[in-house]
Structures are given as C-alpha cells and as structure tokens.
Amino acid sequence: MVFDCHAHIASSKTLPISFVKGMVNNLVASMPKQLEKKQEEYLQKVIYQLMNHDDEGEMMIEEMNKAEISKSVLLIIDYGIVFPDDFPVLEEVFQLHRRVLEKYPDRFIVFSGIDPRRGKKGLDLFEKSIKEWRFKGLKLYPPCGFNPSDPIVFPFYEIAQKYQIPVLLHTGPTSPSLPFKYSAPELIDEAAYRFPKVNFILAHAAFMMHEQASILAEYRPNIYLDVSGFTNAIRMERFKSILLEHKKRGILNKVLFGTDWPIHRLNGNQKDLVEMFRTKAEEVLTSEEIENIMYNNIHKIIKPN
Ligand SMILES: [Zn+2]
Image: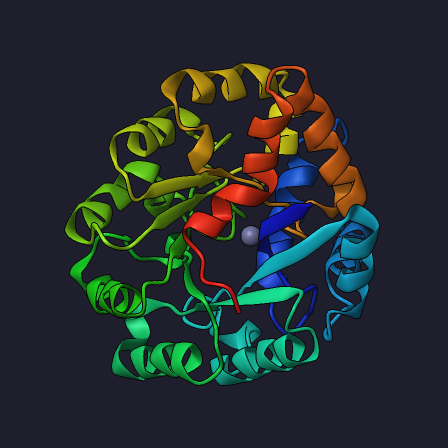
C-alpha cells in the first residue's frame, strides 16, 4: 500500500499562471535555441493544461487507483498575497477542497494553506478548517515571501500544537517567479526548536538540499522529510547514494513518500512515479524500509479521518 503525503488538486483555481510562467521561462532558458514567442506561449499552454483540469479530484482518484495509492494528502497553497491578481478568494479554494474531501473522505486528507501575513482572518480560517471541516494539517509556502521562523508565523504553530497536527513546509528552489531566499531548510530550525510538540515535514528535502535537511532530521525529533521531486535525484544519478546516507544517519523512519502531483506530471503518471521510486529504492533498501517510507511512517504523525 502507498500513502502519498504530498499532492495537489490539479486546478486552475488553485495554481496561478504566474507560477507556471516562471517554470516555463526556466525550461526555455535551458534549451539550445531561443524559442519564438508563439512556441513559448504554446509550451506554456500545454504545461498549464497538464496541471489544470481536475477540479473535483475525479481524475486523481483514477490515477491513485492505478498506482495503488490508498490515500493522498492534498495541500492548499495560499498564493493570494504574492499573486493577488492571479488567485481566487482563499475561502473559495478551501471550499473546493472541502467538496473534494466530502466526496472522497476515505481517499483524501486536506492540509490548510495560509500565508501568515493574513493575520487574524487567516488564523480564524485555519482553526475553522481544522475544527469544522476536518482538515488535518497546515501547508506553508515560505517562498511567497516570509521566513518560516518569523514570529508572525508562531500563532499558526500554536494552533497546530493545540490540535496536534503537522506542518508541511516547502523547501528548496521553486518557480523562478518567487524568491528562493526563504526556502532554505535551516530557516525551519528555530520554529521546530520553539514548538517541539509540532511535527514539521520539510517538503522535497529528502533529496533537494538534503545535506542540511538530513542533519535537522537526525538531530531534531520533530523534523521529517518528504521525497517529492525525487525524479531530479534519479536524473542526477544521486538517488541511491542519498537514500543510503539517510539509512546511515538512521532517519529512514522519518522519510515520507510523496509525488507532488500534478507538478511532476511531465515525469510520468502516479503509477509511473510509484514504480520509479520503488524500483530504484529496492536496489539499496529492504522491502520493510521501503514499506515504512511509502506507507507506515506518515501514520506516526497524522491523525486518521
Ligand atoms: Zn507541492
């Protein structure tokens, strides 16, 4: 069985075009020839469409069934402060996720996503989503422009502590439409130190910027790492050596499987991603260690529906 701890609804209502434009610009810059404007726009359209056509989660359920993923965590990202012209009212995004959760309560878990600069309004929405809508965690996206250990975020960690729910934070590079300076794993250390009862999941950090992140996971009991974006490590031929390093550090039980659907869709469907991870991991880990990463570990820090 597989538990995907990092996924998103593929919907234009949740993913700003500004974010995708940055990704495409970066892709184009690495091509051997300058693309014509028309070609660039076409590429942008194709990539945007790949990520946006499943508002109700139906296609994702099909993908999960084929991949034998029993549950997926859907993460809300609040881009409303950084891309105000390009993102709906945040409450509408929450309602969209609420509908999907009501439709598939056994298959999805939802994490609230709020930019802490929303202040009291954001805090109230976060608490309501936990108390009334049974959301099970908080997703923070520091590249939107805040330090995850800034006191502005502390009231959100206090609520996470009160309800004993985990906080998942983006780490590492992202779309070049956003600054990268707040995405370093070390920036989460102070928050994790001040809130020892809150479990922090560092998104992508099992493979991206893993040098810093794995030290935090080794020495802080409340820091976990997710593997989403692992295809980059396969491409760089570093996948196996990094997994072995986690094993030597004794942190394999703090590593969580995630696909980051639909962001990594260009690398394959959900089934491809699951098979890719398992096949590569089998070369260096035991089946029990793989089962822990892909299914068991997340159950230590997440409450059942
Ligand atoms: Zn993600």
